[in-house]
Length: 298
Image (tube, rainbow, N blue to C red; front, side, top):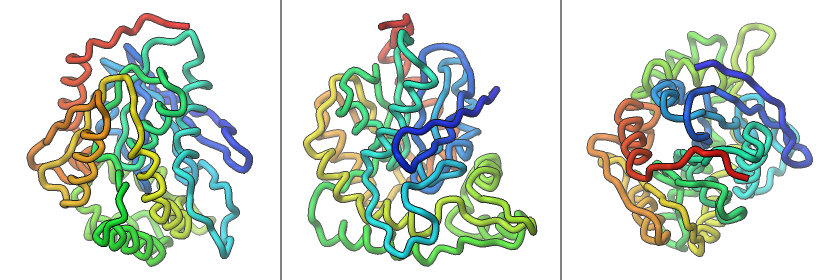
């Protein structure tokens, strides 16, 4: 992939880093999951360049993209996920101005949800959507409330500082990210941290910001619960994912009249980062099925 970086300002207090990774074919706009900046997905994106011209932002708060509340603020309000949708729209407007070929939206977890919100806000933005385990929690449900509370608390407890890249790599390999593809792990280390003057690493997505994203998950779910889009949608779920993630994927697939659900055995929620070849094969099969026209349109 050849990469060009752009600085965008989609809203007051937000500056995005957006990436143009090149490639051939329709535009593929990629939306990453919470905590994993775009270049964490290099092993997946590298398998798509023969079929798509890939672009995407580091959503607000991730990598070099700023958060609308200052670092260290004591009171960080819940994040509005519509802001992530706005980040995607700003990236598309800047990196693929009209007239442009058809756009395929590709998203993981909260990024997949942001794609749907972006299409609802501006119908016709996408020719098709590929959503891997979208974060979808529309109901007031004790299990959902417990999950959101656990993720919010877990984010606030997250270790955010490491003495060196080697120390961070060793910790991550032995924790919940132990299954990441080696290139995804290195991409995460490259772009998921800010380097200090003493070679130490600090998480770019601050724990309080991550917690704010999780705290607003049900608010985003309520918006998605009334969403309808006209383009084809493939909602994908890993066969080894947890019950709530699967329920969310199944629920959004049922909500959207143009959606179909695909189950991939052996994958879990981090499938695009752990098993990129299998996710790429699923995505390419979807593109072949929808036969997207890449003729530029006004």
